[in-house]
Image (tube, rainbow, N blue to C red):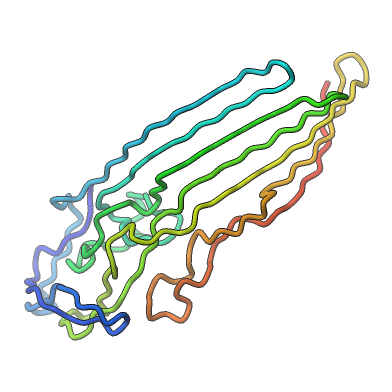
Amino acid sequence: MFGFEDRGATYEQVERVSPDNGQTYLVWNQVSGPLTNAYWLTNPEGWEQKYRALILTLDKRFANRWLMNASVTWSRAEGLNMSARATGGYGLSQTLTWYTQQFGADPNDLINATGPLNLDKEWLFKLSLGYNLPLDILVSFNYIFQSGRPTLKFVRIPDLNQLFVVKVQAEPKGIERFDDQHLLNLRVEKAFNLYKTAKLRFMVNIFNLLNDATITSWRSSDVWNATYQNPRSIPYPRRAQVGIKFEF
């Protein structure tokens, strides 16, 4: 597990009150000069990530006009890595240092940074079901439930000697999460025999049938920002797709 750390500057622990939420934090104040910083990309002690999961599956092969596949997953992804403050889709990436920047270079980066990883989802349930109606009309659906991933919340720390605005995670990771998500897709399909092996197949797909609009990311996770907790990403809305397929 690699990450940045400052092997040159000297820091002392001090208490500071954040103007963004009025909370007192024990933070690191740089007491050596600004030219003493020496940032190393290395393997810092205590950095790690663990993933544990239990998966149960149930399959029914096609018989008596229907088939089914179901699974439920309990998982836990936790630790400390370079993506501990990443707020977008690269929440588990360990290679995109341009995205995670020099996380760990300032020791305040590590405050409240250990815990559930950013894409940790405790529960995942999947169900796929298909049924062959009279007139050889096939109806199938796919349902996915997944727990919300942890949210991030940053506040500023004033009156430190660092030459940049220091911000820390306001609370331990995992206290707050995005809402759970429910996605349901439906397909209706009918095939017509034309000649010998030639078939014409008509299908209608409806995606996100429940029109789920769960927020999956915010425009900003900085408490002082005007766009804090404003929605940035939600699933695509309910939509339909009509298709024709010729098989021979």
